[in-house]
Length: 270
Length: 116
Image 1 (cartoon, rainbow over the protein chains, first blue to last red):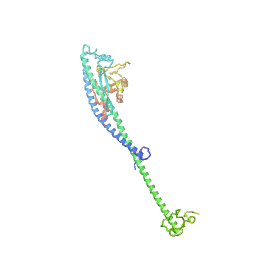
Image 2: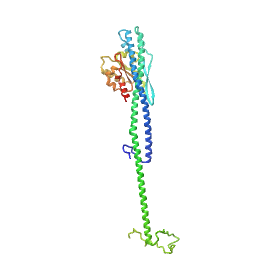
Image 3: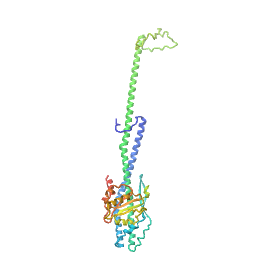
Image 4: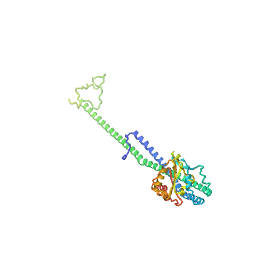
């Protein structure tokens, strides 16, 4: 019988059997649920994967456009670029992101949203030369950044999903390869122990029956021998003398010899 | 979630990229005079880039870190080891270095995973 391999340490009783079977059932349920969750997440994951890929390529093009517009600015404002000015101007970010939590089949995924506040950086745009271009460049860059923010959201979602899928997969495998075989082995062990106990019981019963039978046969033999000794008919069951009838004659008129002192037991030594 | 406090973007890039991004309003200087951008030129040391990268990824108020791809190349091992979900790391092209998907460390993970 199988039952080799790791199993839980339990006493092989029927109650333990019921318990273990219940646990096995719930482990199997859990396994199929987790496998479903993992499959759903994997589908989502692949969808996001494709989106990330194409978004990254799109971003390449968007950023190129943006840097063209910046080049226009440099062209319009003359030889000096506005880099220094812009860096000095940066005090408080007007372009921020807000985070939002999405729930995707049980996994909380953060998403970013661009959050632009009306800035105080209009002093740049008042420049005599190139104010227009600067405004335009800003808008182009802002659009580019919005694409980038979307991309970042997709990317984080992708990384978090990746982690969750790995963890779920580990759990599924653990249940499938460790927990269910253990419980299985436990059930088989208990069953085999119970079966063996049954067989032992049965065997014992048979033995006892056999012994009882032999004892009864021996008693019968002894009785027959005794009666033959006394001269009584061994086939007639002896009448038990009761108080009323006394110890007188029996039905046939013969004195009943139930002299205890004279009758001997076979195994009395003296 | 702590992500509610992450509202800023940060950028490590060449002058043009940083200018453009700052123009859109990303620049921020906090009360400790720390900026959320680093301009990298040909004279910038790799260690400077490394420490800026470390700093930006450890700050709790930065949600997205933009980095030019050719600069990411210089600190490629550090970037490849980066596995945090926040801040989100994004490799962007620059004027002189168009976007090359084969070098993007995030996409490399993507490819590795879509292969299995």
